[in-house]
Length: 293
Image (cartoon, rainbow, N blue to C red; front, side, top):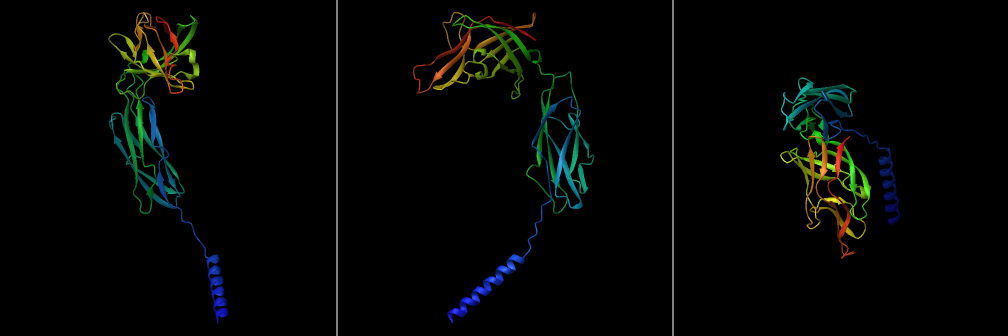
């Protein structure tokens, strides 16, 4: 009896496996629309921006995708406008898998208005069609009339090392601080030429009344060697009697030069590995003059 039961069970399992092997699985890909990135950045003079909207797995049937532009600091019909599609609806047909939204950008070149931004959102108007993970994107318009444009660019001069008296030909690169909403800050690279690739860019704040760029002390100026925690920007007064000063650079409008007014350098903070080794890693004399190239 037991033998007959085992034989029957084996036959049933064989039949089940046979049915399973003969079963066909059909993959049904999803149809959805998506953007390919979440952000766009461009100059105010770009004219127009073309934004691809992608359709995954077009089925040959018409798919309608709604386009919505959302103002932020940029204003609709003043800073930007939807050029195409005029009615705000993209229509995919046949095997089309990509269509462009065209956004016109109005330029205010010659007038400083500040950076502007707005967003775009897509949604589906067609049953059975969804929207992918990237359904919104932010657009940033860069104002080319930054009030500190006169400072931006390459400046050359000569620094003098305090320890050995070496003259060091130096090139400074000054650029916009893109994260500064006040338009008073600049990013400066090259202030520590002795450390080359280990030197960091630092932030300076321009005072339009005094014509000074002030670099706050204790910013990271140098990537430290092993055993040290950080290399900080530190300034002295002219007599080297007072540490922890901000480093100051003055813009002279008459001859278009920058002059460093006080000694400065990279002060290394030590870790437990070198508890008594804090001190200057580099130090430069004051009154270095830089001219714009």
